[in-house]
Amino acid sequence: MLSGGLRTGLIDFTASRNGVSAVEFSLIAPILLLMFMASIELPRAYMIGKRLDNATATMADLISRGNYTDLSPVFAALEAIANPYDVSRASIVLTAGGTYQTQSGAAATTQVCSSAQSNGQARLAGSSLGLPPAGLDRAGDRFVMSEVTMPYRPIFPVFSSLVGWTFRYKRTWPVRGGDIYNGQSEIVLPSGKPCPK
Image 1 (cartoon, rainbow, N blue to C red):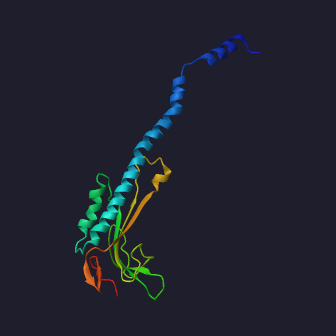
Image 2: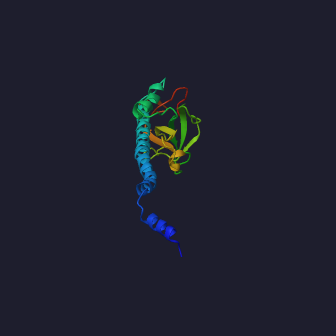
């Protein structure tokens, strides 16, 4: 059995309410902090993604309208649309391509005719782009493609899925302007050549 003093001390300890709020706060505070960080980080990541997607479509639309000797205004569209977010780490690749059919009845393929980049790696002329985009699958069709890739840098590097996240957007656009080569309107990007026949 317990002695009188020890017994009284245990009864007083179990009945004491001193420090309960500190214990409750220490249990709830991390959850509140995570909710606060998530309420900032997740909408920010979503908005950056939406703006990069919009900029990708805008750049594809801009280059589809005609030939450029200088693409810096097209590349500047990314910063204008993504403002106020920092997109200096973004990689942009613009590509003009064509659809080809080697044999009658064979599946159509696409290839790069010319390509330009900003902070990235341009595609090699003549390299394959795979299957043609929807609506541009006839031999001789011409199109442009804009690709934006950017690693996401979170404000709070607590969320492991966002730490290594990379945004990747690709938009294909039909040619709307440009010059006529081999009977087709097409876009030729700076230091590139028209699509082969």
